[in-house]
Length: 239
Figure (cartoon, rainbow, N blue to C red):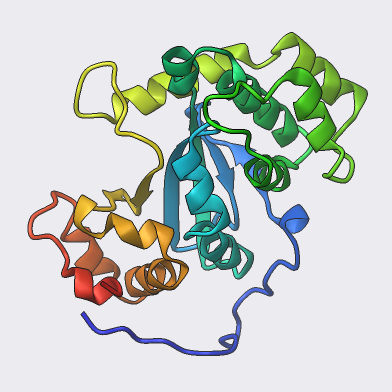
């Protein structure tokens, strides 16, 4: 598979967003997934994450996450997030659920993407149930216009508890075992789950950027991997 790259903006392409604050956000019809980005973008990256998961933090802060964000800003890709909360049951506590609820509340004012970035930049240790109401409200102050009385009430009362429960269930339904999700983070690009053989690209910004570009340039070839046979050559993705 050949990599074709270009530079600059094609004639007639929409102007890129300058900041995350400009990027459209909405709740999907399913009610369990948050959609971020230009709805007309040709490539969709769907992420399943638990906000307490340190591997998700690695993806979001030093891995492919910043590349994904840049592609969203360029309107080349739209991102979707399904927020799991299984780590609360596994480790004890309620941080995953509280963080997911707070993120859903942030969506009400179009601040999901900005707040999502802030929470991962300040993720507590996995074993520490650090996403408390007080901490979530404190971190919300880093996002302009987010910490309103309505947001505070939503955080303190777990207003979106049903969303949190439904999102965890949605995560579990995509696993191969009943009642057990596929692990976090899991990335599904244009309905094709990134195969284990090249999952390392999720944590390498250069490789993940190449992967997104390859899918943009060769959407038909990527769809051939939907049933995981044959698998793509890892060398095509920088490995």
